[in-house]
Length: 163
Length: 215
Image (tube, rainbow over all chains, first blue to last red; front, top):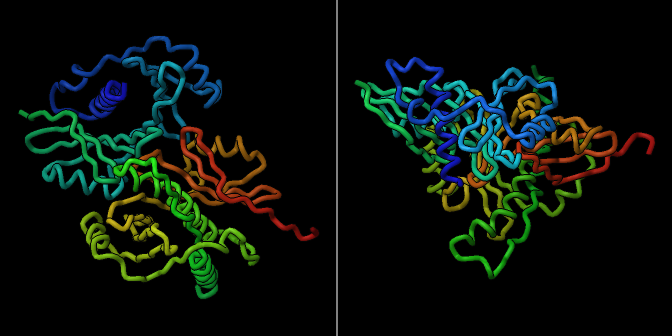
């Protein structure tokens, strides 16, 4: 389950990171990962959302791999809430300015991708692990989707050569 | 300028006074713990309490507080500012954050829990990194404005303390759990240190009755 969800999260984040950046050509990221659909979400999940954020919040829904994602604006920031089918919250995510990444995160990324530049960043919070930052890094010869925490863990999910 | 500097100095003295009295719980022992997880389980509880204490300091130091000694601080352990930190920790810090201008505090209660805290300026923000003795990072914290608290956290706190006002907030990111926000909440009758995460987990660490003028 955990692995699936991580994969789903990666899929969503990839979509987010690629959809909002000029990819310099067709990017296989969305093709590989995009299974999101604007289908009707479970009433239980919808009820949970309404209970948490109120009935009048303007929200759009996506469902990926049994995870429902509510996207709405809170305090001027577009926020995503990830729900399991049973209405439990899996996590919260939002795009963040690449310049406000914690120093430990940008330090780890710079060390790992010394030639690369962070293009976009997405902050994701789950109940049982520290805040993770998903980034799209562009280097002269490759682009990468990776994630890092403030504790030095860096994970590379997708690396592709730039022709 | 001089007048404005006075409260800061006062706060610092107050902070030092509190730090001197910092509490640490006696190390939790449980023979059933597997050796590999021993450190984590034993320290987790202590460190959470310690963290609450430290955050209390941060929150207290930046808010007006009565001069009445707080009973919570009586049995608190010792925080030493400027004590020589372990070269291992110093090296870890330098490796991670470069040669930032850093000040060190060590919290020690003469038991097994000892946390070294590096305070430094990270792009204009004051941050604290909390280290175990072996150089492992326990967590990273910073003071934030209350309007920077995630909506869920504010809602959880407001739901639990409907008559309360959040005064100050501290964000703490830990390796093994969700980001936790420590806040000082003041109601007409009480002042509390509360922590909450975005997943609805709210805990009260300290609650004290406020003394009113005519009581």
